[in-house]
Length: 355
Image (cartoon, rainbow, N blue to C red; front, side):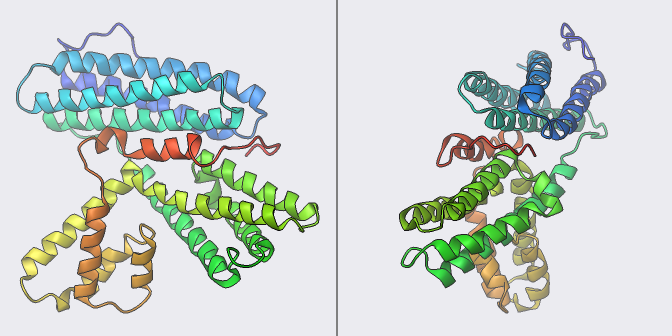
């Protein structure tokens, strides 16, 4: 356990990095516990989780405060560490305040989802500051978000596949013009396939909550006779809108970093190739495939046989979609996604299924 009274001003970067790594291990341990707690009734899970998470967040914030005190006012790389730590603290405090405000008014499952969101932010903040300190001190970086990156890519692919299936249903059944009943039956099958895949347990909890809720609403509509055309159309609109909300997964820090690295390589290739670019088609296609799932129009282009110039133009278009990288290392751009998923278009509903 990390001593909350530790002072870093006279300690070495190695000791500071070790303290951050200690808290990161606690975050990872609690994250694993969170998955196990999801199978428990929430009246048992939340009393175990919330006090532990609150204490862990306080520990992390205290250490980051001390890092800021240690490096604030210095020049060179230390100034960069201080700036990054300041941003990490700002984002963490926002998450803590939101978490504290939501406690009394959120449904238990949604509150459990907020716990996961706060844990992700802790992981990002600790990893970003630890990495900056290690690089400044020319030390080996021991914390990484590589596991989270691979998982985020798998989740994005799953969401893209689900979104394409719903788009196909929308084009075939035309629920906006005809009865939405047939579209709902097909959509229920798509949801069932997604919930049956191994990746489902790795999706963001708020998304699993909403998918289960939509599934239950479709089953309830069918059990009531399936004759309520107005209710069916409203349900389809909710499902269709939620499906596109899933594109917010692109705002995850791990995916933003991954996509920016791929597009940086594209820019380098384009500069080095000069005027002749057609010979780059195999390499560009390989790089483009690594970005599959980010944009539906881009995915449609990849299904054909685009030329090198078409691929390059599309890849440059994706570059313009990326948000500013200034706070990406600690905020990950995910705040907007979390906000939309928990307080925006859709309100997660209570369910008797604890997953």
